[in-house]
Image (cartoon, rainbow, N blue to C red; front, side):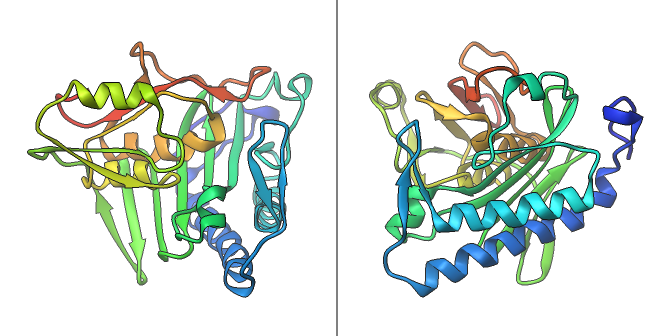
Length: 266
């Protein structure tokens, strides 16, 4: 499946040929994270400009992913949370990798296992392929071309969202805010399921939840792989006004508040 014929240097991309190598890259990064996670009880943690934490595991995973993606697709540039690129360099990008090498650093520090490796391919402002790997849970989700899969214990199964009664809603474990609490207070007949990192997108893609609203700040690398997977599975995601989220390079890395859902409930 050729997704584009006008990326830099007019090189075509075939996601069906890239998917397995990229999944393996995510797993290698996950193994590096897991080695640090299991070998020490406390981690070297620093604060970035936005006051979010970064650990040795973030940096180790970033180095692996960046190196391997460059080897796999030297024609496609990379934007990673831990390796930022200035807008003047990015502004002409038509296709690029968008990476969060360790999504859920707070969950990593809390040692609850709810963190992931996220890799997405952006094409013409949209995420067309996504991989989310959860090292502790030993599960990988990926999606492209209107299909999504879950890989666990060496087995791959296609996943799809499902309706439920009562509706199951997921909210952030570490970033819950007043606006979400006010939203929930207006709803009836629902259950809340809480989990960290991008696993919420995966839960929606496989039918564990039907709604995931997010009202406070988040970055594009936090959501790109998740959106690719859940939309490939058949669910929906927009900003709060109902517009598609735009991943076209811009000076800001911020994503708008969004809602992801399946079925009539949105």
